[in-house]
Image (cartoon, rainbow, N blue to C red):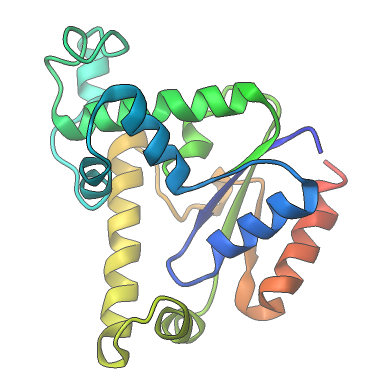
Length: 203
């Protein structure tokens, strides 16, 4: 495996578990919350700030770039005109680019597909599943209260869609943005890994 694999997923679809299993199958690094930890260490921001930023969006990063701000300079100088959320996104983006430079890996979420769009060695995957499957999985895996599971699934997906739209200008669930989209509820987690591996072995 000589590819960087990005995984975008609906909440409750098992995308994180699928990504971890793919990384294990290829014996390559897996990055999810590790991106937050590394970005926090490099910038000095608290990890909690990164987690909060992923739940909301504020001023436009793309507008800041369009206006010619030096957004890739230091936190103290180049980031001064940006919101905290935008600074955090840029810090994560820098880490994502660095881990991709380090070699083949699996990166889950955080607009990695968009951030790495200019690289030729990236394969972008989208994992979806039926609402019933995702609701049940959120209860069993994430211990979401049964009476709130449906609401939380919808809320999480909306949050991810807003985050992606804000930072990329693209629609998060547009399958045309990805090389392959798969429904994990149709073949299960293990079956999805097998299907994706068969695809990845031939691209």
